[in-house]
Image (cartoon, rainbow, N blue to C red; front, top):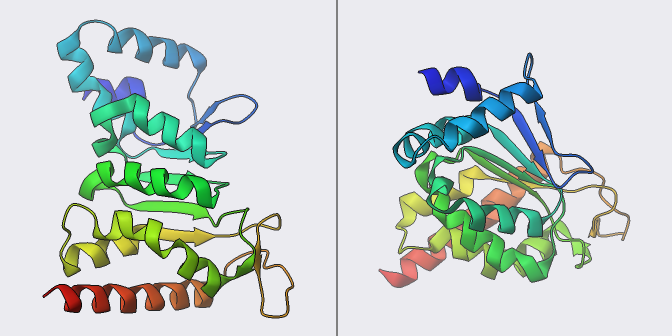
Length: 200
């Protein structure tokens, strides 16, 4: 499709960095100008073309607030998003962040977020503390068990050296290994099973 030729079929769009970057081989700022001009041609073309801008792109946000603002601004185009990463988050913003994530629907493949910086504890404690806000996305819109589990599979937990995720000894965890991620998912799957069994 001609729109794919202008927008590109792949790429990483970084939002909230010192300078926003669109990283894709052979992508130039002239291309961005052409894409913007295309979107403003008329309403019908804009509706048809904007899907190409969001699908198969990896949007990376330097903070949860940037993610929330972006999601509000793009409106119903949220349903085209496929891959999202939020580098920093806070307990205060998780509620709205996961509320916005509900609008992505089934097209979303992954949502990676660093665990909140304003809560210090082990990974299990983080998961327990975040359950109420995670539940907004996992259980929202009257999701059944199958849908809840599919949504859980899209969530990817991450942690950096500046995060408040610690081992039982109190030492910080610089990254979350696959084994630890699997443990998180098992705990959350158990919570989902208990919740849905209780509502039957």
